[in-house]
Length: 260
Ligand code: BV8
Ligand code: ZN
Image (cartoon, rainbow, N blue to C red; front, side):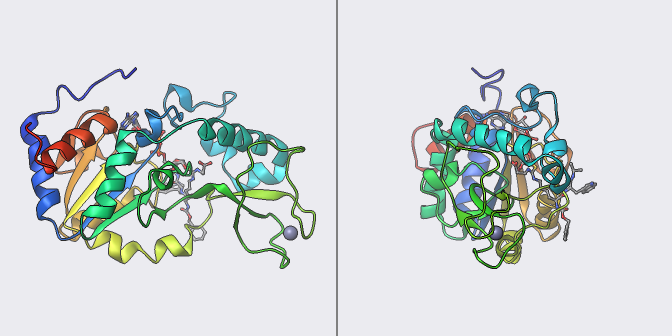
């Protein structure tokens, strides 16, 4: 299924990361769409990243929604239905275990699919919001700013605010919008780590991609896990060039003392 495996990731590098995971007092992992690829969730910027020949940067904006809320919602409704059919993969499972077993572990995700949460990950910091939340586009006072909405089928698009009748908006962060305050409040903790792993992201969307450099500037050892080179590759201390579900499972096996 994958164009590359982790066969060419050297065992000594896998062991080095496991050793650092064991020794670090605080570990932060930043994930992107690549961790969900093995679950069947399309990434944004690969060949699958195109949607009706438009780029995510054109659809995921307040201006696109203002112009054509129905088309934007069709994309989100499709993604909800697709993600609902997916299950977490080994990458989510390993990160979930680390979140519960490693002291000082923090997972920051750019993903909106909810698969880290479904894998039971403790304390997920959602940098770009959630596919499974909505808010009132008019920002009316009759409803909370965001609330959970797990519908995968809609009678009519866009869905409407139960209080004022304005369109509901997806609870994600669009381009040009601020990162949620709850996520920004966790930044200090996220950056105060000894080991920073960047997993399955093209590292082109800011400010998320900048966390890597900020953590490095504060002394963190940085590791990338991705089958392909990215914008981050030249800036990390160690790049493990393989799929997350494979590489993280290998690191986890060493961490748990399995014969390697
Ligand atoms: C903000 C919505 C200010 C949710 C998304 C120039 C310089 C710096 C910044 C900017 C700039 N111009 C504009 C900006 C700002 C802009 C930005 O970064 N633009 C970029 C494109 C240049 N950023 C913003 O607008 C942000 N907000 O700056 O606010 C502000 C401040 C105060 C007040 C008001 C405003 C907001 C950004 C929010 C973006 N939201 N989407 C949705 O519908 O999903 S972006 C979208 O990209 C996704 O949400 C995703 O989270 C994000 C990152 O993508 P990736 O996850 O990395 O996915 P991608 O497909 O790119 O890559 C997948 C990777 O996986 C690949 O590398 C592949 O090799 C790898 N892979 C594949 N298989 C595997 C694998 N890896 C491991 N294992 C595998 N098996
Ligand atoms: Zn409303």
